[in-house]
Each structure stands twice: as structure tokens, then as C-alpha cells.
Amino acid sequence: MDFLVAFALPQNWQIAIVLMLLGVAVLVFAMEWVPVDLCTLLLILALVGTGILTVQEAFAGLVSDVTIMLASIFVLGAALKETGVLDAVGSRLLRLTGDDRPRLMLSLLSVVSGLSAFMNNTTVTALFVGPVISLAQRIKLSPSKLLLPVAYASILGGTCTLIGTSTNVAVSSYMTRENLRPLGLFEITPVGLAIVAAGMLYLVFIGRRILPSNPEESLTDDFEIRDYLSEIVVLPGSKLIGQLVFESDLTPLDFRIIKVIRGAQSFVPHSRSIIAEADVLLVTGRVDNLMKVKSTEGIDIKADVKLRDQDLQDADTQIAEALITPNSVLVGRTLREANYQQQSGLVVLAIYRRGRAVREQLGSIRLKVGDLLLVQGAKARLEASKQRRELAVLQELKTALVRPRKALYASLAFVGALVLGGLELMPVPLAFLSGAILVVLLRCLPAERVYDHIEWRLLILIGGMTAFGVAMDQTGTAALLARFIVEWLQPLGVRVVLAGFFILTIVLTQPMSNAAAALVVLPVALESAQVLGANERTFAIAIMLAASVSFITPFEPSCILVYGPGKYRFSDFVKNGLPLTALCSTIVLVLVPVFWPLEKRDTDRVVPPKAALSVPR
Image 1 (tube, rainbow, N blue to C red):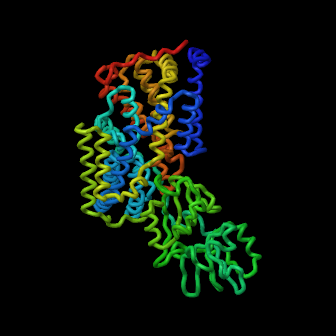
Image 2 (image 1 turned 60 degrees about the horizontal axis):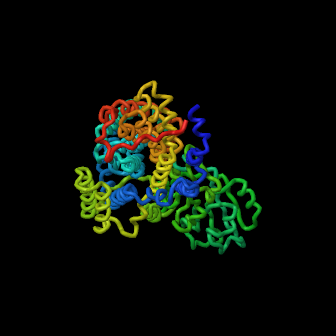
Image 3 (image 1 turned 60 degrees about the vertical axis):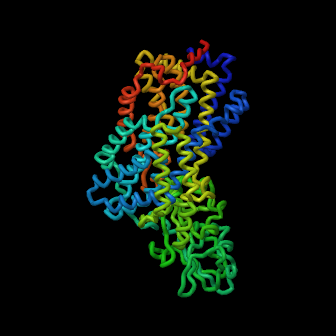
């Protein structure tokens, strides 16, 4: 009743607006109507437009130390990858593994979680998808038995250090704004190691038995494109003669010419290829459109072509699966908008998205992170596409192309930043900024490509949601919700209140990003801790870890990356992730109050605590 009365009071109109914006944000994040970064910027504009925040308050999060720190970590991680350090680690792991599958899995997950403790988990997952598939094929094991554990291990590893995930950095930054001591670089490591150990044991001895064993099929079978292949023979006098392959009369009907057979030769066409008399064009397209062109003079159609993988490949041309990663320039664009075939020289034969193959109208499909493309083209073109970060081609990891001197520089810069920040010899953001500048000056990473490696959408999301947290605090929305939750759960004890916020965070990470969910719950949780006279730091760390131990759905970027390559179903994530979430949640709720007691301690604050906001009844 207090909640409804307070909500109806005229002086609380700002609270009503903030709650409405929160509901809209959750809905938009869940439905993906607009990109998350655009939604976040619209949220900021609404807060400024309604007078709830000043311009300075609204954009403070976008130019904060957390932004500098995360951008620096992205640059350092890119330098380690560009110089071959990460590939070398992956190659060595593949050489050392044997046929003992539990031991192999334990070694693999240890390396993945160890790297993820210091790098973005999505980057680590993307790095290992290709090698893990090759490794599984080599030991005659379904890739689906390994890929999901790799994604989970990368998420688990992020709980070990301050820089393990952007959520940790964002929460620490918000704690600083609330006059709490920021998190130390390794402050959460003991609890993180316990989470990782328990999670890996579950994955190795229980999870792998639950995981599906999806059979390996040929690529053309996997994407179910054989029945969509046809041969068109160009007869004398055909209108197609002399036309450019990509601008022919077949293009408006959404036919893709993937191979040209000319006499004894065959080749993959490029943007300047011209159709000639007697050419045999191997095309993919809609069956109904195929019927339309049957009546066209000057061509002969041989439908229902039955081809094998090798029929689409030769010494210079190959087909491959390619993954759309978060950093890909294709995210959010269609193949037609990107002019992809002409620009890259690669033909997209099919798209695999979350359990189903898409073969029709490929040019108009807006690509998403985790989409798996079946592409065909020259090997050199595939390699060039990888270098431009358009695709992560899923193929065997060859001997890593390590640049020894540059790799050493990048490694020393990264380790130096860790030491300086970990020993508090330098503020953590400044330590990593120094490391990022150093790898650029030493040419470990081309200066012109530095900004390409920074995940700007994530920085905008964190900055915007930090501003939203400030709005919740200043308007009294956090205090209102805190009073409501405390009055409801306080009779059951402080630990139950903490558990309530913990579960709420896990629930919100399903439609929202982890960082956004944590920053929405955090202001309310801190306000509740003040009302209860409990330790705010305990609540903050519990909320932060709650955002990183949710494995129930495949909406976490690392899970999205393995969804297609592993040929998983939505239910596979629920069956495996629910027990893992319950296990990790139990560990956090038991250990966090041990390392950070629930009793309030003024030493956790930089300045004395503010008085709890009063809310009209």
C-alpha cells in the first residue's frame, strides 16, 4: 500500500517517469527492436529532456574512468591477439591434449577461464570456437560436447578479477560514485576461483553427459542447401551474354551465381566477371523464382542438382563456415547493404541462425552476432576477410603466426598493467591506459586500427545505464523500491533480502545485458542495505557476481557465439545452465558474506555514509 500511495503523489512524478523508462528499456532490450546502444542514448535523452538529469550528469558515465579502463583493456587484448600470443596459447593446448576426454576438457576449460579472467569473455570464446571444432573432429567427438562448456568457462573466468568482465568494472565505478571504496584488482579472486572450480567440475563430470551429441554432417547437408542448387546453361543468343555476373537479369530474382563452368574450367565469379555463351552457371535461389525463369529464352535449366561439398570446391576455391562475431562490420547490416559479395569476393550460400538454416532472401536478412554463414570463395579471399575482422572462419588452427618481439612487448605491457594496478602502485585505469598506449607506440597494434577493436556499443551501454542509476538515486526511485522490498523481505532476515536482490539480478540478465541488469538493481540494493544497516559493499559484490553466474538462456554473447556452430537448441542451454546457475549462486550467497561480512563497516566508505532517503508515505 505504501508503494501505491507514494507512486500516486504529485511530487513523485519523476519517480513515475523513471519507472516507466525502466520498463520500456527492459522491453526494448528483450525484443531487440532497436540496437542496445541506440536505446541507451534515447534513455539518456529522455532523462535530460524531462529535467531529471542535467547534461553533465547524463553524460558523465560516457567519459568516466570506467570508459577509459575498458577501452584500454580492449586495445591490450587486441594487441595480444594481433601479435599471435593468444593463438600460440591455443595451438599449444591442441598439441598437448590427448584422448583422455575428461582431462582434455579440464585442461581446455582451465585455459579458457584463465584467459577470461583478464580479457573480455566474448573475445576468448570467439578465439576458441574454430580450434575446438577442429579438436573435436580430430578425436571423433561431437563439437557440441565442447563448445557450450567453453562458453560457460569464459563467463566463469570473468568472476575472478576486476577486469574479468565489463560488469565488474561498471559496478566498481558506480561504487566509487556512491563514495564506497572501489574494488581491488584481485579482491574478488578467492570467491571467483571457488566459482570456477565448482563450475568446471560440474561441466566435466555432469554437464558433458547432459550435452547433446549432434552428429557431424557435410556442410551442404548441415545448411540443407542441396535442393536449392540449380544449373543454368547459357544458350546462343541469350540476353545474359555480356552481362556482369552480379548485375545480370538473374539478380532481381535473388539468384546467387556461386560458380561458373566455362569449358574445362570453373571459377568463382568476381565483380568484373562477364557471362559468356555456353557458360554453365551454378546458382542458388527460390524454387518459385526458378519456375519463372524457365520460360526465359536463351537458357536451359537443370534443376535438382545433387552436389557434394567437394563439388563446390577446387584447388583455389573452398566453402567454409564463418561466424559473425560482436566486432564484425556486418553486425546489424544486410549482405545487400554491405555490398558483400562484390566487396569481399565471397558468396554466402546459406545462413544458420539459432537452430535453423535460412536459405532464401539472404540479401535482405539483417545479420546478428552468432549467425553462422556458409561461404564460398577463393582461399585468399577467406583469409583477407578474417584479417578485416568481418568473419571468424571456423577452420583448423594452424601453427600460430607469432611475431616474437611484438608478442613479447604486448605480453610485458599487459603483465605490467596487471602488476601496477594489482599492487596499487598506480590507479588501475591509469595502469591499463599506459599499457594500451605502450602497445600502440611499440607497433604491436596498427594505430589506424586501434579504435576498430574497442566495443563502443558496450561503452555506451555502461555509461548510459550508469546515468540511469544516478537518476534512480537522485529522484528517490531507488529509495522507494528499496523500502518496498525491505518491508516485504525484512521479516525473513538480511540474508533473504540479499538473496532476493541476487535472484532479481539473475532474472533481469535474461532480457538485458549483464552490465545493464547489475546497474539497474545496484542503486536499489545499496539503498536497501542502508535502510537495513547492512554492509553496502556486500550487497554490491553479490549483485555484481549475480550478473555473471546466469547461464539459463543463450542470450549471453559468449553463448550466442556457440549456438550455431554447436547446432544447439534453446532447451540445451536451459538443461545445462539451470543446475550450473543454482550451483554458482549457492557458492556466491555462502561465500560473499564470509569475505565481506553483512555488518556495516565505515571503513568501506571513502566518506561517512549519507542519510537514507526518506520516501513519503
